[in-house]
Amino acid sequence: MTVPIRDAATVVLLRDGVDGVEAWLLTRVAQMAFAAGMTVFPGGRVEDTDPDLPWAGPPPVDAAFVGAAVRETFEETGVLLGATADLRAARADVEAGRVGFGELLRLHGVTVDPSGLGPWARWVTPEGESRRYDTRFFVAALPDGAEPEDVTSEAARAGWVGVTDALAERDRGERLMMPPTLVTLRSIAAHPTVAELADHVLITVAESTTFRHGPLASRHSELAVVEMLYLAVCQQDYDRTARLLSETTRAVYPRRPERRPRPHARSNDEPRRDA
Image (tube, rainbow, N blue to C red; front, side, top):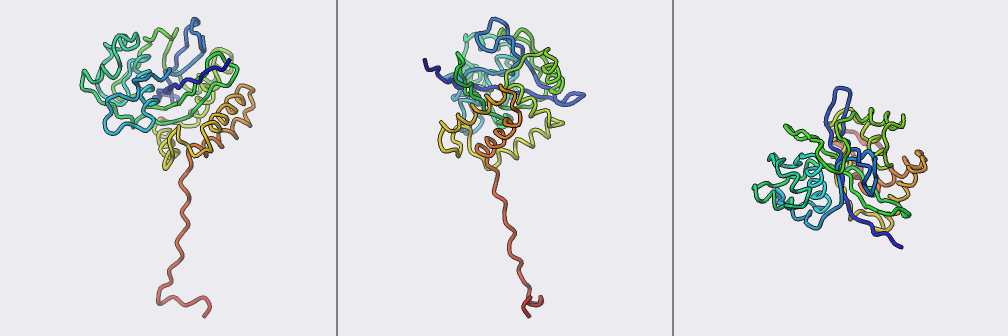
């Protein structure tokens, strides 16, 4: 039986800590049908209404994924990305489906600026799993004055954890992680501050295409590359993982071509070389 691939989005919420960058990590409850007991970032499936949030300006090209990222972060932490309003009192109603997220924003005259969410990675659950997701990973700095809360019913615990500390706990067997979480944390650990990481995002996506409409030959080939990456991590083949990450980054986020220096212009007073 073919398992459908569902679109999803997740957000790595970050802040600067005393010993480096910290991430808001959740441990999923044991009763969850997918990734039970695993350390994860806030996130979940894309909903039909996610593209239709009240955007501050033109909607982002991948509005469904960005909208899901903003909504899921609000549902699971109370943090509202891209806006300054405090709507935490309605968080539980949104999570329970008693009120729509876009409806809540419009009711309070709130618009969402998506510029603070940086695209970071894309992962597709490989074949053979009972549930499959095509997930976009975003990074976002904790907004000024905001503080996430351990409130979602989907997590047994949640809190700030140093990225290097989380990786060390995983290596000691004290924290369970699926490959996307592991690789994401390892890639973030290379950056000493959130600001430096944000600069890296801006450089990487400059002159790039969108997630879905990449320059790869087709969506099928793009998914194939990401699935191979997922399997390489599962097999702990980290040399292959690094190579695939490099290839995927170049394909999905092509860098701006280097400009060749202009030919030297000879002044009237400069002697000719063949003179």
